Length: 353
Image (cartoon, rainbow, N blue to C red; front, top):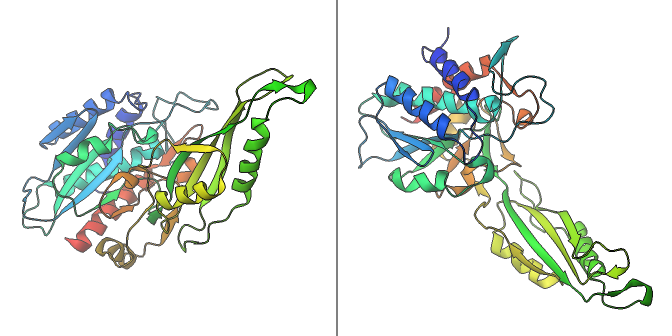
């Protein structure tokens, strides 16, 4: 038997799919979520394109649980064979851009929030936030809304995990590097080739292994993803070569430690674009994780990043859908996954309320 909120959650997801909501352009979906709360007599607030609400009997003296997912999407994959903005049901699947990442999680969490909204005498307040700019880790997303939510003790971040518990998440640091040489004529063997200097560092990056290996997230991974010189002429020795490192960091290192290692080994200058997307983990003996284990949920370390990285309190990443479907052509979520997601979230919170 379906949860009474299931039908309204699916209808809401269809409305969200039909409304383009690329990162920084989420005005339309923010209005749809706000209208949904109006319809269900939920008091809400909005800051930028973030929509948030607190349980009806919110008590400042109680600890609070945050339920969060995002309503922005990436651009549609060029391989789409159907209109990404036309929600389409077939064989138990709901197709459309953002259906899996993270629309199914979002509407399941909204349904869960409604389930608990009017409850009195609970151990925890329930706070909900639909955030913007998650796909680009933008500064006008969850970071903008967090100061308005009151003190949050821990949270659930809705991302497609097949309803398993992602208890840890890799950090992401993008690092711009510059190898400096001096330009010269290639035929006369002049100058100092910056490309060759860069390749020495690239080779070190390719082969270096950090000592600490996480049981949940494995080893830290460094990957050079972009390289370019300052000229396009075949007969000029490049005087400068730029390259980019994509650094995926486990929870056993902080970013400062990684940068200190670079200082010791890289000849090129380097600068991180941002140090915001830190690795995070939630203890396996945390009440939220223990509740999930009691419900038969497994746990793992996630290789992908989310708004979880920007939250200064313990969070569990979990939701309906499959991360492998995210950002793919003809994205879909099974309707049964939404039904199961609502039930799983409610059961999880019931365990600790």
